[in-house]
Length: 206
Image 1 (cartoon, rainbow, N blue to C red):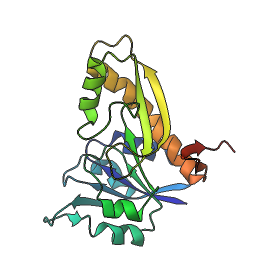
Image 2 (cartoon, rainbow, N blue to C red):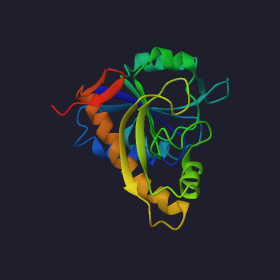
Image 3 (cartoon, rainbow, N blue to C red):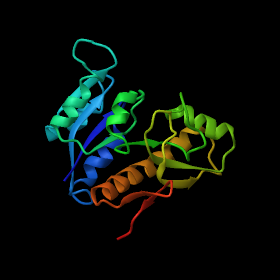
Image 4 (cartoon, helix red, strand yellow):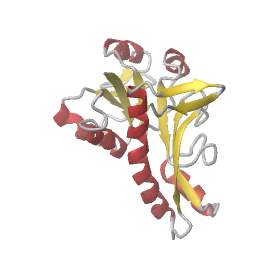
């Protein structure tokens, strides 16, 4: 069983995509905890019926929040194998990254290494893609390191955006891909079919 912790900041549509995939494609996956930088995160509503524990997390001590200093003990107690950033808008502290090297992944709404970096999230990304007149966009799942959107790319999928009229249309098309790509990568982790070799990431078929 692959035990995952999912970090979210907004509506949690990628979280929902994982939940939807668990009965079928992700039978060997368990969402053990969901965390957010917001106390009233809308995504928390998605997991209440599943009785999945939730935490609000902060860099500093705040009422109703845990801190990132407390996080490792919680993840250890829950025996977390993989941390999944699914629309989480805060930077994971270096100390946590050191503890979970190559065990933290993020989904980014563009084809990295283009349109990434600090401040490049959500509609900020799609606006830049649109204004660059890019003809394709897509989604990227990558390992998280100490630099924004810099970790090794695990998987990508692209979509034609040559006929879009605004950034909202790009966002809609990319989100559909995100909802397929993230569960796909998590499944590969659950099957031990992700390998780092020769400075590259390979997804094994068998």
